[in-house]
Every structure is written in structure tokens, then in C-alpha cells.
Length: 232
Image 1: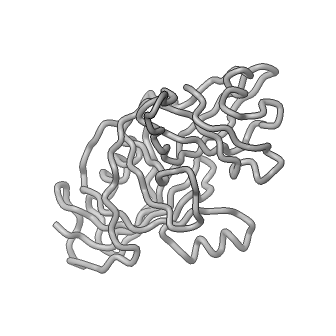
Image 2: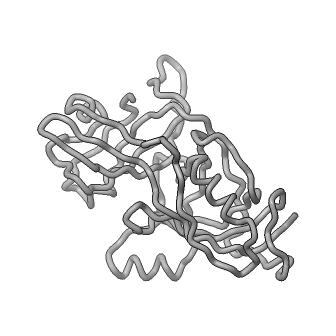
């Protein structure tokens, strides 16, 4: 992992609102994004493998905290509690499809503005879980789908030097803090006239820390998915 941009002190804002970047070499698969208010189609038809679904969703971390949602009511309730949640639009996704687990689906963030990021990232592991969980659902139905990562731990062990190189003040971060990361297709810093790739936002959590190392885990927990319609 290599530094792509340096940000300010943790004391400037809540821990998880401190924008830090980590370049991780992953492939990009841009998610097809539908209308925020997706219409209802084929109301009595169950979703089958090979069809295309229009969904609303709330992505949660492993502790159940919502990170991004298409549900404006949930967004408003979380903000009243003092919790910052991102607002997105509905997504169009194949039912029962499979892609490489390391692919990235980039979801749009419509509120608030997250300057410096191309959108919010889901990995292929999570897209596959959602896609498989849609099989048999009917329009209007909501389902909680847990994410499966197989043997992939999705964690990075950083030395104090690594953390400082990424613009993180090692002494300020503690176990349980959420750290915004940036996933890119290349971990290299551009040189000359090359343009730096805009990273996609990914939240990681500090899950362990010693006097000279810390572990950042970037798994998510589940998605609350509402099937808004079936288009094919």
C-alpha cells in the first residue's frame, strides 16, 4: 500500500470522517445505477437468476451501523442521532450473477459531498452476496443479506511508519475507530504528467493495535435490500 494523499488531524472531526487514503490494487467494475425512486415492475413475479433487479439498499458495517443508504427516512433518523450516513441512489443489478470478489462496484454518493472520491465502493464479494440473495424475492420485499468473504480476511497490518506514510497520526487512532480508505486500481503514485486515479471510498476499522502496529479491517457486515422491480 502506498500513500496517495495526506489529510489533517483526527481531532478535526469524528474519527471515521477523517479522509485517509490507502491504494489497494483491485479491478474496477462500475455498478449500473438506476433512478433513486425506482418504479414497481412485475409485482407478482419472483426474481430469478438471469433477470435484472432494481433495488434500494442500506449497507451496514459488521457492528450493524449504516454507512450508505437509499432510504431518506433512515438517513434523517441517523442524522438526528448524530450519526453521519451517506445517501445514494437505487442500483440495477443482475440476479444470481457472479463476478470476481476483488472487483469494485462504484456507487454514487448524492449527499453529502465527498470531494476526492469517485463514489462509494462495494467489492465483488458483496455484490455477489446481494445478487444471490435476490433470487426468489418479490417486488416490495425487503431482506437482510449477510456478506460472505470466504477465506479473505480483508485486513491490512500497518507499522507506525506505514501509517505515518499514509498521513495517519499513529498515536491518535484507537481500536474501534472507522477510517475512510480509498480503493484504486493501482497502488502507485503517478509521476510526470500522469493523472492520479480518483479512489473509491471504503471504510475500514481499526481492529487491533500494539505500541508499533495496527490492523485495519475493511469488511462490511450486511445489506438491507428492497426489491423495487424486475426489468428482465
